[in-house]
Image (cartoon, rainbow, N blue to C red; front, side, top):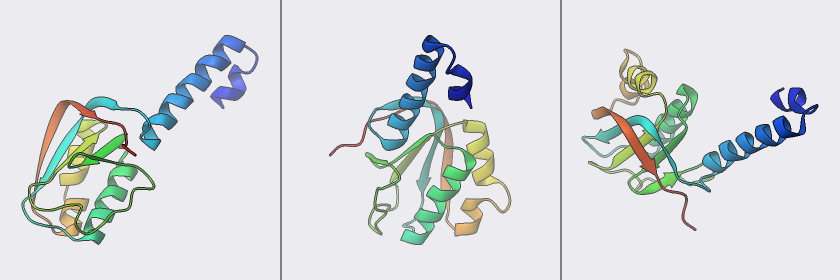
Length: 132
């Protein structure tokens, strides 16, 4: 749509392609990303299925990027049962108010997975690019 509209103007096309490329690099973890968001710390170990449900819910809510511990999570990152343990920090970049409210609302994913968690809003979070 933006690209179709921009096709009549080379500069606009280049700008639109540049923005799309930047988004794809963030999604794939090829570049570091910074922004506001939230930080989640569980007060207990959680199961692999609970973590998968949480990540999927965060994607549906509109997160831009996520890291668990110091590991950036992208679409092809395997989610293993040892990835999350008590006190492991989960950093999420996206609209902090929407993320916070969606996670903690009645019937939200935190309640659904039955885990006890601390969730804090963060004004600036930096997630490094995927290594390897």
